[in-house]
Length: 73
Image 1: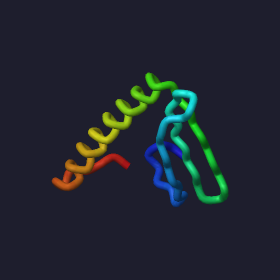
Image 2: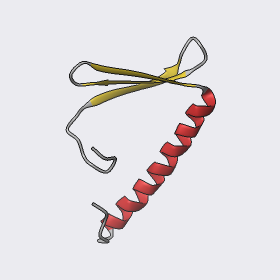
Image 3: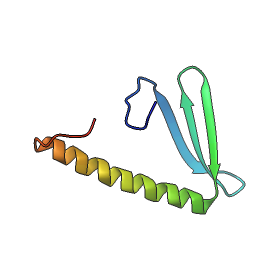
């Protein structure tokens, strides 16, 4: 599965600090999958920047589609 492919898998995500000074992204998916991902604060900030950039790009794609421009598939 690639990043551009849609999925029917449902998951919950939680983000917060750990007692060891790390940032945890905790993902829980259907089928009993639990995935705790710990990052140091600098890595977490890099991830946040990537999320913001991806949101901005998605917003631009979405607004292009709304104006009748063809989107990528």
